Length: 432
Ligand SMILES: *[C@@H]1O[C@H](CO)[C@@H](O)[C@H](O)[C@H]1NC(C)=O
Ligand SMILES: *[C@@H]1O[C@H](CO)[C@@H](O)[C@H](O)[C@H]1NC(C)=O
Picture 1: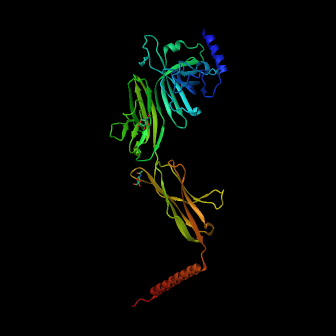
Picture 2 (picture 1 turned 120 degrees about the horizontal axis):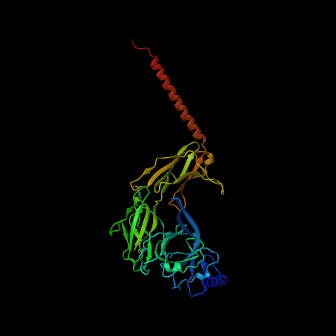
Picture 3 (picture 1 turned 180 degrees about the horizontal axis):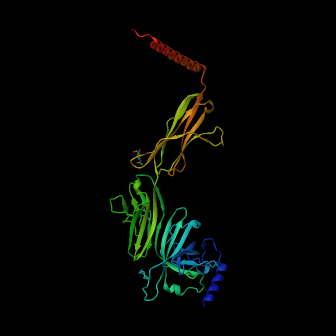
């Protein structure tokens, strides 16, 4: 059968098969389903007659077999949508790139780039060493845009696959269908980890590779403004791996997390001449302890009271603290209390921050029954912390007024007497 006839048969078939968006139902129920991901093919090209490079982006599709039954070779060629989008078809034998793929395929960011081998052949079990011509290599990166997981893989297209490609070239570098094998994959189920100080944390990393290949895993820490630091994973130290776990587990256990552990951890997996990295970000957050100096207040009109909100031992420094005057009616918004002052920030030896926000409340009858709330928002908190003070304000009674008047009068009298005494002592003639 010629190429043309073969293609025509393919088109005919694809017209009959019902398609589910983002996944392809195979025509044969014996074949496993594949996952269809929209991808961007990214390539750097040298601009002719200059030494500049440009990045060329091209929309492609990646077809991944999902884990499960042993599929036949190239089970999806017939059911590709006839949209002329170049496809990378991952075929057997391959390692599993996306173990955790679920329904939210639209949340995946997928990139494929050529991997230049500098004209050396990469030795890999099961791949022939040839005198003429070489395999074509690609790297593929898939990231969940909400940080649920991430994976990178090496894809290889054999020489024989390239020779049997369909002649329809959509782009000078990639063809309509590129049949590749995934030979090495590194994944993490948690690219961003948050933990509190002093806790133990597992930085997740796993690899998949042919069992005949020796694999070495190394962890390093990247922190802004510093050199990359290799993590020593000796047993008994604060950082350890899981040697007793089955092959493929490259996770790192970090004990008693300290502030200086924060940064981007690189899980670097080396197999033969190939190396893949997966980044896991470790962020430390410590919840603030929030207290107010009083819970309820009973004041006389005109009296003053300092309301202090204490925010202790939180991390990172970025925080929002407000004093609010709650509304009386439902459905109204609280007012922000004006003239609130901030104490200086303190830093404790474990690196956490503390400070307070306070203001002077002058009791006003309008404030009787009011609630004042200190509201704290911080990245460590799911919902803001609120601490409230209820204020009761009494009218100054007549006896109070009398008392104040009496006090005032007494004050005046004392002052007058004092003045009088002073005047007398200075005008007294000297005794000579
Ligand atoms: C590796 O093993 C540890 C310890 O049993 C486990 O917590 C972790 O989830 C494993 N990681 C992977 C990627 O399988
Ligand atoms: C950090 O230090 C402060 C002050 O010494 C202490 O109160 C707080 O509990 C410490 N936090 C942690 C997580 O150890």
